Length: 116
Image (tube, rainbow, N blue to C red; front, side, top):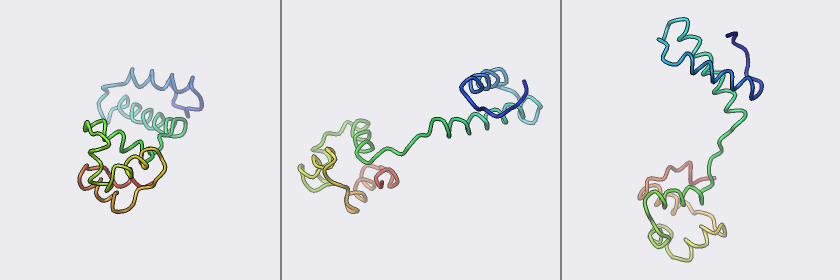
């Protein structure tokens, strides 16, 4: 298959099919080199066509709550009060630096996901 830029969904589908055909090729071989080129083109197309944004802090904390089976009451030690937790989760209040540090230290939430 001739290597060319991926400009649309039809090109994208063809590129994916070619990657499937080449999958498992040894590095450093012509097939392995072609596979690497197709993967690079696909990644570039996906970054442009399907960008993944950083979740907002509320989504981030809700995700961590779900993963760790936490309830709003479990966040009170980091926020200071039940009402502050509720206000934050409803979008009425921003995180403070103190809360961000506590959530990072105690729950392991990356700073970059808490700062928007």
